Image (tube, rainbow, N blue to C red):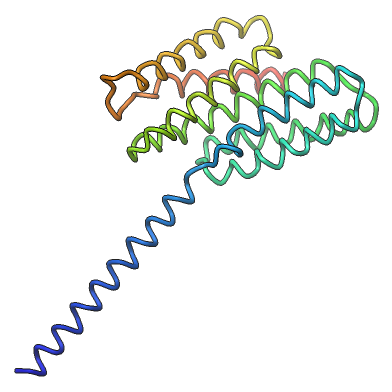
Length: 214
């Protein structure tokens, strides 16, 4: 009888230890999926600096900041899904082309504007999706922060937008602002339907890539 009780006790301890290990592992995975604030905001900052240096005829500094932005965008791919990452990857390729153009002293303003527009919208799309994930996991603070970063990226992208896309981008910006206002309000719930915003930002990116292929 004593031996039987000992066995039960041992199994009980093993179950508890296994449970703690599983929870720790899941907690670690969850933490890994939380994008840091520096990573979230850096692409916007570096791309803005790159444009500034380009305007001031400082090609070396421009390339340096584009390369920094590329590095961060690559790290954001870790947090995205396959659909988001295909747009991030395309924006990385286009930014690399801009670097090549600058180094060859053959800069196309159209190419630069398109690459910056796509990169900022791709980052906005990724961070919008991560924000949605955070909200589903009741991390309200991070969700709001990433929505505000999404808004910042979209607003910056309007500097490089083509006239035919202006209304779409303005509408998208308005809807992101509405989402922030709702989630920031005292009566908010930890839920928001991002479907419409996701569809609209993806449509903008698809249109941009279609225009490049023509």
